[in-house]
Amino acid sequence: MAQSTAKKRTPGERRRLRQFIVCLLLFGMIFAGRSLDLAPVERITATVSRWVGADTDFRAVFAQMGTSFSKGEPAAETFHTLWSSLLPEAGEPDAAPSDPDAAEGEGTPEAASND
Image (cartoon, rainbow, N blue to C red; front, side, top):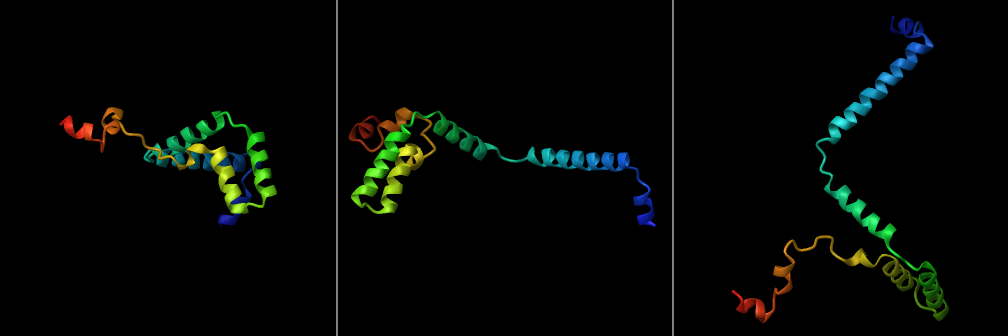
């Protein structure tokens, strides 16, 4: 009996049913996404923005890579140097101290005498 009702639907009804299902899926995704923590996405966005906005001399970087290959340096070392040249902040920690004055004097004798 289910097959007979499915065959009776007109093309317009099937289109509206597909639209309704898509709307329900979008609503469900938005409803579920409200509870997600977006801090990692914001960090990734900031990092990509820094990379895109950076003034990188690609010609110099690839010339350096060609020189390394000409000298016979290992490929892994050459590509590591290339990666470091293109993305210098890749090795830097993401989190900066919240109080720069407190972090400046840590571990120095002056910091210990200020207490």
